[in-house]
Image 1 (cartoon, rainbow, N blue to C red):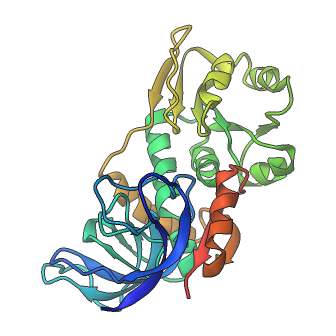
Image 2 (tube, rainbow, N blue to C red; image 1 turned 90 degrees about the vertical axis):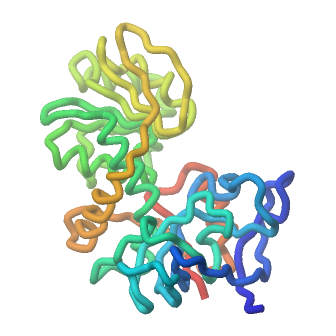
Image 3 (tube, helix red, strand yellow; image 1 turned 120 degrees about the horizontal axis):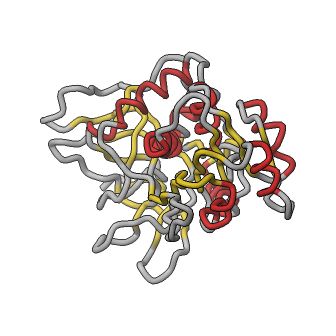
Length: 307
């Protein structure tokens, strides 16, 4: 039995992650085996695992690599194809490994001029940003406030919104303000500043059309900056009641968003959208990358390169 190195959870009762040698996953007829070249680091990667699985279980939800084996029923991809992929809640394990399996529906052909590291940073943050824009449903001239705007999701949303002519304000620590401005934010505020809500309201002439609450707990804090009958979209799943006619809803998931992710990957390759990777880590420093992401203070995305 051939083995590989992977970052694994060893049991269901502990959230600890460690490097271990595990079997290379087998491929069903409707799956491909990917030699992972890089994987993205997500805030929930250590916790987001299926129920009733065998341990040790390789964690991870997104990556990039080269197909090395295809199942008999796979027709759209062949051995040697460079792909971006997702492995969300797969029983056979995730992307934090030297090899991973995925179904064709979870694959995106990697555009030319995109590195494996860039490809690995696209799927989760990119799809979440696109789903957020869909839920916000804003028009040119509207005002949007993004709570926690300097991370991977916010980095995309600032650019996508600005490209539509939407006026964008974002909150983050002061060190990230110039960064957000460079992406298209018109107003930046420091969430440590007790007057930040007042600053946003003044900028938006009484408030914003909608707010996107990316970080946990930011939905409630965003309520005072949204105009009457406005909208708050939460990414983290914050549960809160609306007031003053404000609609509060969780960002949704739609299968057809995958087509938009494909376009986003090409826009990044063609330098129409900026993909920000704060740091690339070698495989043996994967836990350091995970811990950094879990602080929620990363700028853009963190990725790990496999051996």
